[in-house]
Amino acid sequence: MTTRAELPPDASEQLLEAFKALANPVRLQVLQWLREPLRHFPVDQETAERVGVCVSHIQAKTGLAQSTVSAYMASLHRAGLVRATRVGKWTHYQRDERHIARLVDLLGRSL
Image 1: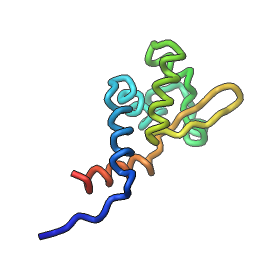
Image 2: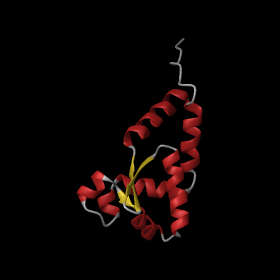
Image 3: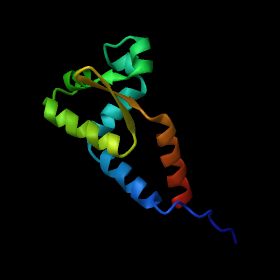
Image 4: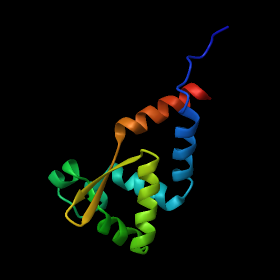
C-alpha cells in the first residue's frame, strides 16, 4: 500500500480558486491565448516576454467591456494563473507558468 505525500494545508483552496477562474469560458480562452501571445495579440516579442499583453489588447480580442475584462483578469490573477505588470496607466498580463505547473502537480497529487 502506498501513501500519498502530505499536501500543503492550502492546496485545496489553491486548486478551488484556479478551478473557479477557469470555469468561465472567456477566462479559459484568454489564458489559452496568453500561452502564445505573439500569435493572438498585436505585440512584439520583447514586450510580450518582458511585461506581457496589455489589457486593451485582451479587451479588443474578446469584444467585452473594459470593466468585464479587468474583472476577469483579476480573477485569473488571484488564482495565480497570470502575473500583472503596470506600465504607466496600463496593466499587462502574462501567464505564470511556474504557478500553473505547481497547480498541475498539486492536482496530480491530490486526486
